[in-house]
Image 1 (cartoon, rainbow, N blue to C red):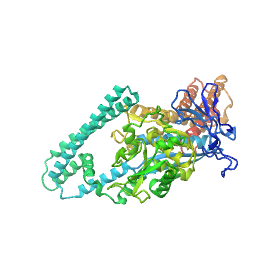
Image 2: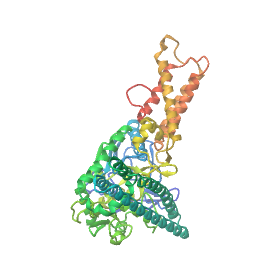
Image 3: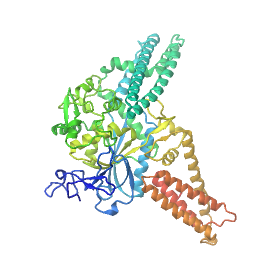
Image 4: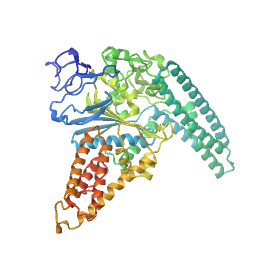
Length: 631
């Protein structure tokens, strides 16, 4: 227990930071004996690395040392592996950011949710933690609003018989010209920002702008391809009747993307029916859940939606205003980072920046969304302040609130739904690498502002990006493969094995090679199980039993024991499923070599034990289903 207020020195010279006396629970505090200002349990002193921009992280203190085990988890809050210590015995409260349901899920989503499913299975089925697992779906957001509006406007255009082929040709050409002009402007801005970053020797900005430029090249290539298809569709011979209708349909298909942008700019403000937005998100939410089931991903213990929490979100925002850390401006509400940090809170825990560094324009755009407020940064006290509540503009759904008609900010939803289900502190918060900043950093800030704590989440885990041809798989780049497309050519088991063979917290490439490698490993397991199954079916009791091949049997048994130890060590080491899979495959290679020996007299029971054990681990990983002993 922490009893003093002064900093201590660690053996390596690092400062050990202790919670100030004012934040510690006293005997008169009206809370449970396990409550503290830092969550629902006791904490050890925090260690901060000398010369690092990392903020303090307080390791949970275990009441029972046995409850800590040896499990190590890479914690994004510290950037390194930390011993996993649940707040309450073997209970684990785990929240995962779900999808923004505006379009079909792709293999990049599978990367995140399959990896987290594997980690969850290891925690529950192997380490036997009692996990309460919550997932939230974002069912109202700038992306959903835009896509729902655009789809509705294109649908109306398709149904409008008064718009003939010739008029559609003119509209398409105009829309394409606007898209090209917008693309040219975006490239010019990126190149100017890149040149300024090079001039300022700002390596962080150089990397960010170079990434934006690479992404822009892909987007421009996509636009050029659309331009070719539009030109071809505009040159179709449009006769009478069916021919004219077919030409019109083909042009609508070719120009759909640029027409959607044009129509939304002109008429998006006229789409106001909440039912349109709800129907859009419900469709893709169901598709997402169906895709997860097809991949063999376990359903969460609790599933929440943003739109079902709007009253609680309004209350949450009001509490932060009442504490003086948020302010209203033109119907929106922003978290005041200046006030937040004055109260002793730390910002950007997951993506630490040098003191005085500001949020970049690209990061700000990501945080505020495509439908940012009309006032931009001018209605903020600090350009880095972020929206808790957004005033709705024409063409956006709105809910009543004390601040005026509006809708939740992107980040606020997770704080509210997780706080409702898991309480004011949680063990694990998970999501994709791309959510670190601004989404997860802003979640932490608003939650710690509202709950009055210094550490809302004890362990933050982020799955690595999935790349295809060197770039992150992304809908905006149109370089994605949907989960349903992937399952047309591969089984769910093969995709799962592919991810098992990768480190969950590192970037990976999706290619024919990675898929083929998974298929090869799958065949190795299958062939071994079939061979052992054939041996077991024989009447081994009619022959000699025991180790009939002496040292060779002993060596195989030793390899088996070493494999079990290696797999266990790998799973303790940050869920190293790649290491565990490779250890099991080495075991199979040794067993296969043993079975190929001249005059082999195999130890059937030993081989059955090997196959049974491998099956048990593959069941933990979700690769093998059913009740069979092995295979």
